[in-house]
Length: 271
Image 1: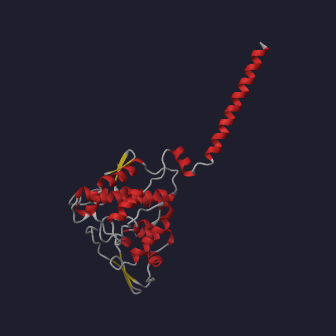
Image 2: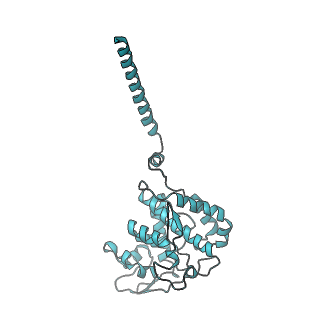
Image 3: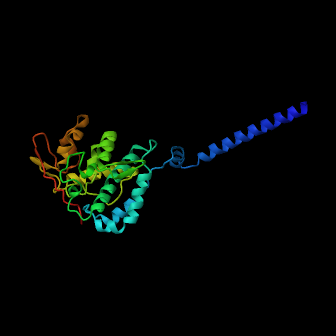
């Protein structure tokens, strides 16, 4: 009886040592795993790779931001791969702020292109949907055609319900492109977390110094309707429209500058 008890104690002690050793090996191996990979393993989803969209943008968008929609149609199968990638991988809480923002900005721009392709040819995005358009109800931006996770959302949901509400960064208005000539330039590269800050600032400089979109002189500034439509965003946190203009415009304005707003050109941003 004593011998059996002794053997059982030895066996239990050995099993405990094996368990501790296995745990130590696991911890050591995780130290050599890419942190993002390890994080993805615990959260179930890794940040989306935007390289497919990046390649398509380089191929079908020129330096002025004009889009070759016919080219996108020819490459529809490849484009669909990217859209499906977005749909299957909504942002997780473990993603960084920039990873989430890049996802949503790219999603907005990519699904806007797809909306145009679904109704192509059109002269304007506003030709899509109801003849009488009620903001947030019957406009093209209110159509819930974007599958993300287990639900379908609209472009309005992305812009107003997520980007503006969650991230509170007015620079998104320089990046979201509604397929119209008065929109900011569609970059011929995808937004990525590592470069997001510089990309948004570059968009601001490009937009404010384009006289077709913002005609600025020290005495009079004819600004994009964006500065009228989203005036609350520009004035948030004690800032002003003048401060945002001066942050990016080569020509500076002040409180005595007469400000007006340009008519918006909704014609398609097509090459």
